[in-house]
Amino acid sequence: MNASSALPTVFSGAQPTGQLTLGNYLGALRTWVRMQQEYACIFCVVDLHALTVRQDPAQLRENIFELTALYLACGIDPERSIIFLQSHVPAHSELAWLLATFTQMGELERMTQFKDKSQQHHQNINAGLFTYPVLMAADTLLYQTHRVPVGEDQKQHLELTRDVAIRFNGLYGPVFRVPEPLIGTDGVARVKDLQEPTKKMSKSAASELARIMLLDDADAVVKKFKKAVTDTLGVIRYDEVNQPGVANLLNIWCAATGHSREEALAHFDHNQYGKLKMETAEAVNTVLQPIRSRFMELNNDRGQLKQLLRQGAEQARAQADRTMHQVWQALGLPTSRT
Ligand code: TRP
Image (cartoon, rainbow, N blue to C red):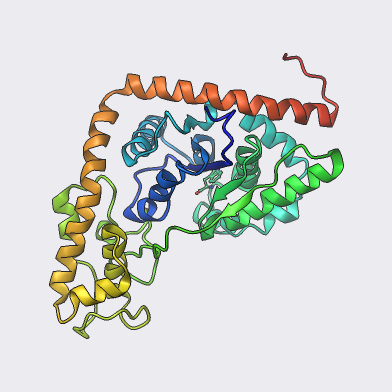
């Protein structure tokens, strides 16, 4: 359906490196689900990107299926959108090589994610970590993508994609559509760490209490919200600077219930933090419960997940091959394929 669709194309992906947090869901996945109405969406499990840091093979395999099941459990619909595994479509690696020859070392050296990751993984600063953004450029350019939903941390990579595409088109003619960022998460504020509420909620935070994982059970969610860090002021106001913990709880309650900030403040006026914590936990459980149960079903049927990824890869390959033909032709590479 995607290929002939008149809708503009959106491409996005996530790495299969462990479970998603509530922040990933409210900030990204939930928006992806909604975007399916307005766009022809392509959602990729970017396993090749995950290999830029050392992975345990059995764990990686498990993570790949779990992330696929989570996409579906959250509401990504394979009838509407393409869901596939990056390594199933070899064109990603092929185009990444070709695009690397149009990307300057200096451009990659400036990438803040590379600088951060090479500090984190100082014992394994491999060339893949360095060329990571080139593979990401290949991901989106292969599908003549119109829009790429990006968070703050991926903006610089999308900028690079655009620069490389414009450079290539300048030399060879309009081979690639230059993708635009799609910013906006339905006004949802970024979900913060429950223990250090000035930081974003991250799956790598030291404390388990800091983050809500999408598959946490209901009791764990309640426990984590009960232990969430607040302050000693004892009034429920929205003040990110002086009461970041309370502001975060209010934001999460709003995102989970669909209420506005004004409605939240009116609802919790003259209440204790305990009530804010409990109601936020309940609201989050209401959102996560159906995702958890759908996930359990889907994740138990590996045969079905494999079949689905196979279909997705076929659809993706058909689109990617069209772009590869144009690229080979532009560069003067005779194709051996028909
Ligand atoms: N780099 C992205 C991240 O870590 C994942 C990603 C890979 C991606 N390829 C992409 C996101 C293409 C959007 C489009 O979050």
